[in-house]
Image (cartoon, rainbow, N blue to C red; front, side, top):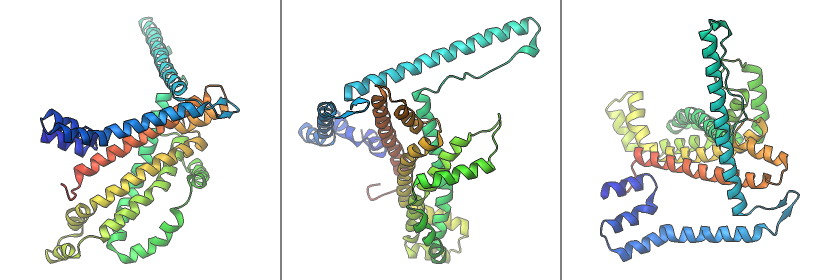
Length: 337
């Protein structure tokens, strides 16, 4: 039981801990009260939210009709899933026909006429979700590669920290809408695409914009974590005459990891929010472009589809935070671990 509870706590799924304790025979009354606090009240609150949404949405009339309620949003979510399955079936049929055609050409001795083409159907809603997740992780990875080493230098050296502080304060509040035109011009001028290119320009525009907006929380928290290391610990490193690399890996990083991970969680959250605006303007085929296309489409179902995207963005953002929370618990030690 302890292993299961420890796993649930590490992964941030503490809602299920009372259920495990009840199954293990602990005081049912106490655990039922705890279960009501961690699961019952949130579920009741969410049901009330859905009821209020359903009642009030029909009273707001827009140019596209009334604001969709939960039932209309669910209907469009199912429709998007059905469209995804239909597109997958079309793609499978396309590749099957291509395989048969090329096989016949090979059998007829006409190998020079064999051609392999990719299916060019429009990306489905799930494809756009995958694109957005890839983009945000690309931007987040670039931000981490830049922010963590720079934050360590700032935390170890007051001179470096003083030098970078004006730059951090100047660029930290800049909106992604201001960065995107600059990034777009630079990428267009320096990145040449071809059939073998790994990334499209629109993907790079979005990913780099995410990087520029999300690196600051990690940079600031890393610098703070390194600067807050116990001075006695650093003095021990000097007494032992530890090398620079050994001091960083054995003393600095383990001691500052809690704040570094706090910065990483904040950066990933900021990056996910920034991504939607970046995709809208760069036309990177992700969730942001989906929202913009539906807004421009103006059909009777557009608002419902946009609400599906809004809920999807929220759910994915929550899951990304849970992933970072789990990694933080696995690699750091707090007062309870």
